[in-house]
Length: 242
Image (spheres, one colour):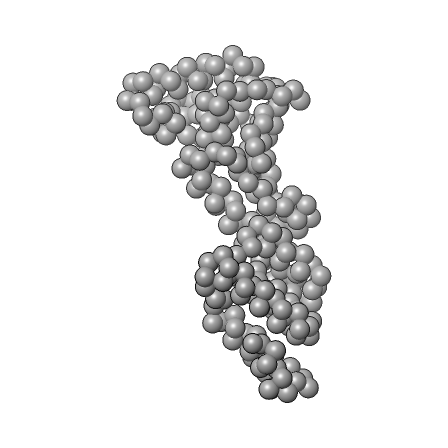
């Protein structure tokens, strides 16, 4: 059985083998991260992606050198099967652990997700393949937090819904869907003044940052709720919205 290892790509690169940190050059970090994020990859894809400025012969030569250096580093983390490279089964990957916190319904284990908060994949790395995977994980986190909020809202757990919505807002303050959910939570609780404040605070944020207004649908949601509020005079309700 091989030496167990833990590879961390969220909030920065780190590799531990047998509970000891292994320090790798950036070239080796990129090789390991690329294969790990795909679980397995053909040598030609790895060479062409990591060394695009080199011709095929040189790119394959650099890949062979990088694999040899990785083996010499005392980090038995990659395995080769013919032309395919893969992460060894003894390596635990934090990205896999994050994804395991999300079940098939997309709601996931709220304690794991809320405790971890939004995590950034390999901050400071600007390779196209990193940017794509980083955005995928960010969107997955946002959608999961919103689904948690919707589930709690429908169950009448307004505190839990607020917790999940604020986690989404911390990850992406300009995104409308969590602001709309926050509005719906306040309205469900009967907190009309907080709902109006939520709308106007978001409108001012969008105006300052992007020069746009919230969607008409969000405004209609608030208008309808204020109009239907028990004991609210239409004129007073409309005045509060402006």
